[in-house]
Length: 154
Length: 113
Image (cartoon, rainbow over all chains, first blue to last red; front, side):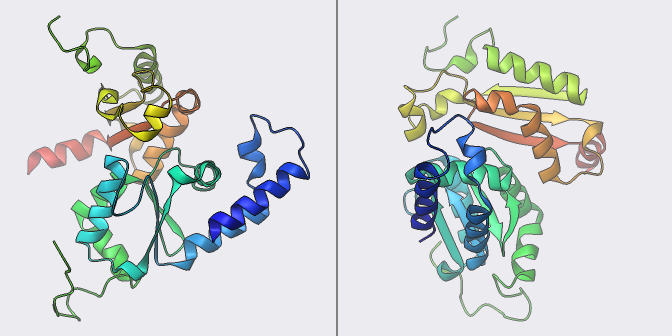
């Protein structure tokens, strides 16, 4: 959906405003319009992950680690949306600009950029991630909802 | 040297990108500790690396850096500092940095436990 939207806006830019694609295209093409669409996309689902590959077939160890951490935290599938940036070079460069972050994965929680793989892992280890996910109602608080076995497959 | 040719991290001389990472981080952060490891050989089969013919052998690094410059900053701010210090390297093909960014105090605290 976003992909289609991004593509549509991108091709408009190409055929319309700038006839010659240039090196600075990446910077230019992050128009207000694109920016708004990305902001919508990162806010549409509680957790949004821009990754290499898919949850079932991650194409990079760092993306795999991010998926594993979210799985361990018990983030339900309906609360997680992933984008495979290897399939969409425009989305890929747009996200580098949008997040001001040069690498993937990139994790958003309720529209806020959390960071990359190293940050996610260290927040997981320190307990900050659980706190953040609870605060944002991504996972139920530890005490108030005792385990009705929400843990899924290990 | 008896190391396998598939593991350039074991060779004696660091490549130009690695040298440049070291030099920039040293001068910008005057770190108490700095370790730069080239992990590129572990990633040369990845789709994006295959697309560039396996990369130039200097695409993936791990960096551990201990510096006073990180005091009072969140991990994300620390990582952004490093990313912006190395923006030229990223523009020229650096693909991934695995970062550990600490202050000397944090290292001491961790050691005390």
